Amino acid sequence: MALVQKKIKFFYYLKSYARIFFPKLRTKAHFDALKSQLKPAELEKIQARVAYYNKVVDTFSLPSAVTKVSDLLHPVTPKSYFFDTYEYAQYFDKQLPLAWVFGDVITVPTVPSIVKSRPISEGADNANSVLMNLDKVRHFRFVTNDKPFLEKKDQLIGRAGVYQKHRIEFFEKYFNHPLCDLGQVNKAEGRPELWYKPKISVSEHLEFKFVLSLQGNDVATNLKWIMSSNSIAVTPKPTYETWFMEGTLVGGKHYIEIKPDYSDLEAQLTYYLAHPDECMAIIQNAHEHCQQFFNPEVEDVCSMMVLEQYFACSKGSGKSI
Image (tube, rainbow, N blue to C red; front, side, top):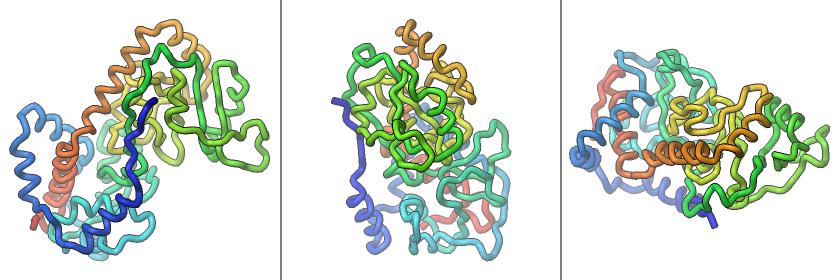
């Protein structure tokens, strides 16, 4: 049976509050030591990720009323965003200005700000959106011990809260399609009663060759665990991205891409069912993409370097403590 690496929220919050109320056990020197131990090729990959997450390269100043690092010590809902930012910001001067926009962010802030998600842009149009791995207790889950692709059912499985217009449209088109097993996990007036089905586990999803991954308010939360499994994500080209770097993913290489209007879904599923070798290649590429997030020390160094660059560009320097 497939296993999902899932953090227990009780222990996550316990550890997060401990960072606030007790002196930190590590110093920035600890992260510098980790960085110094990296091989040149590893450091080069991290630097590329940092440049992707934080596109701010010019000096900037923040409004005088902006929040500071010390304000992260007073978390409000959604608390996980405060905790995940403070996990690394605690190693810098508490009086340094630090702007953030927490939640499901789909627009670019007016000043360089820490965010979980941003619109995908090949240029600098989203440079004020500085990505950190936020709300990771919910979003960053990966699969181990999954069954082989060829042993799975020849269908697309989809269970989701169907709130947004684009999700409703998908269900209207394909709920009764023989290649699909769809279910709406939320109850809503005006929807067909047949749409409603209870939630199922990740392991139950992974009995199927293909898993539906539609964006919600921002990114599709399930894309990460699908790509770490031996099933294949089926989705239109992402328009938002997070720490997972969805903007670097390529349709036909990392996932099965369908048109934004979903009109080619049947053709795509039929094609890939007839070409299992191509499916295996997609799964391998997806696994390689996921593997770069598995090393906790690399993730620590990467997160620290994102903030170092942020503070170095802001007026007041990136003084650490």
